[in-house]
Image (tube, rainbow, N blue to C red; front, side):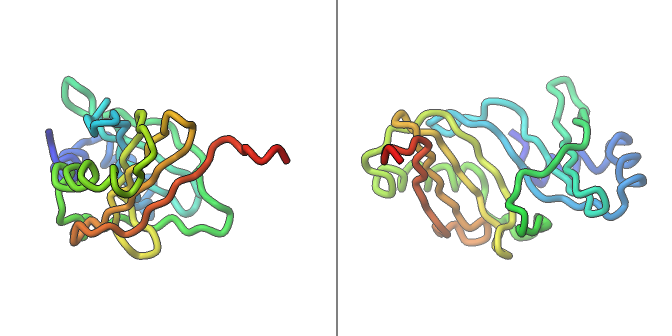
Length: 170
C-alpha cells in the first residue's frame, strides 16, 4: 500500500492534476479519505481532496487500479456554515496508517466498550490547526463512534459517540 505522501507525490506528477492546478491555482490539499472495514482494512483507493476558495468547492482525485488518477467533478463542501476548510500539511503526518490503526484497534474497546463496530471511514485532515487521523464507524446500534489520533505524535486527540436515532420521543 502506498502511503498518503507517496500517493500525493504520484498525483502531483500527473498531467491531469497539473492541468487542474493551472485552473485552480489557489486550490489546496485538505484531506485523504478512504472507506474501511470494522477491522481497518481499506475498502477502496484513497481519495485526495483539494479545496478551491474562490468557488468554495471540493475536487476529489482517486487513484485508479491500473495506474493514474481520475478526477471527480467539483462538489459542495460538507461543513458547518462557520467552519473553515483547513489545509493539510503533509509534513505534519509523521505516524503511519498502520501505526494509528494498531492504536485504534487497541483503544477502541476501552474508549467505546459497549459498541459493536460496523464499517466506517478514515480521513487525514487538519481540524483546529491539528492534523489528525480521523476514524469514524457506524455501530450496530446506529451510532457514530469517532476517534481522532494526532498524526504527528500518535496520541488520542478526541473521541465521541453520536446517536443517529433520537430515542427521546420528542
